[in-house]
Image (cartoon, rainbow, N blue to C red; front, side):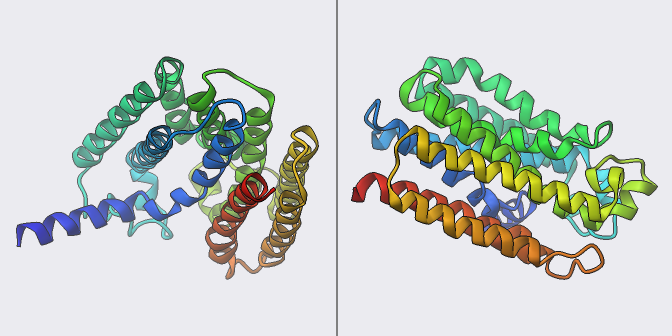
Length: 290
């Protein structure tokens, strides 16, 4: 009986932070680790701690976001049934969860190398800072992009212990990719954001123009991913993966119209998860098959 309750609680926390959506950023971090393997061999121990660092950092960030946004979530019809406003989990429990996740992240950074350990508080600051940005800037979507975009750079640092251009380009690609789909996702909160004086690109320029900004952001992301093909002299498998990604991004935008958001969840969750996995497969295939 006790075990059942513990498992149920774990599942509730997983739902609260949308644990399954860790798939968005993790493949990009792993891709960066594979690319860094050319300079320094990747060990299973390093790979393990990279995954632990990624998952714990994202868990801390999501928990923190739920904590500081709980009043807005309670007022928003779309989010009022989330665990905190619905009373399924207490604020003190979420705060403890954030603290534990943060400590796990710092420890995993220490296990990677001293540079990662030294930069871990900076990473935590960035991912926590995002949760406040919608209160004062419409460019919060790009801050979210930065919060996820540091993962490829962090994975590279974990392997090599030094900065380089490829992970920075990959990180920037993640910034614009995340910002693009977050702008689309913000379309559904247009009226709520206006009522509660929250900032977003859709609220700033309107739904139709916001969609064009999202498209431009994804075009920039694609260009940055393409630049890696040139910079690293990658092979046709990577280029094939980019071709598939371009098609999926186009399909993602075709699913969403300013006056029809019924397919938004499909565009936001399904397509972006598929895109990140395809990117990782193309990197992996390029590395091991050629």
